[in-house]
Image (cartoon, rainbow, N blue to C red; front, top):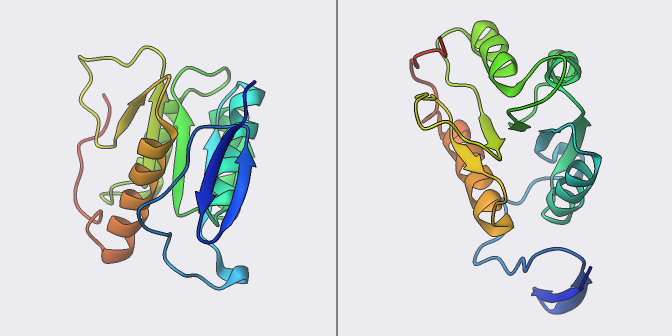
Length: 162
């Protein structure tokens, strides 16, 4: 894999992932109060890549290999946002989303779904990212979801997945 140089602030880094020059930083948060992202994907390499990227951006990261494991983690520590694959064993991303919707009632869950084969026939109450994705676009989407949740903008009724 080719390393791509990226610059953040005044220090240079060499990263084995996409260019991450950000036009704006994440909100300043105390180190012990970092926002948590739950990454859910059955592909270990993608989980590790996203873990590294989100940690580099200042998030605390939890990882799960399927929706059932993610559900268990979510019940113990609700993250600021869940970034989940759709097609996984045990409990897929749609099933996880339904559980979160059930637990949150009418509140829109802070979830971003990812899929290599996104359905154009299903209307979702959450953003869907097609794989492969641009890491900068995913980071911007995560920031938008976290920001909307912080502002209360995501606190509205949503239609569930049938």
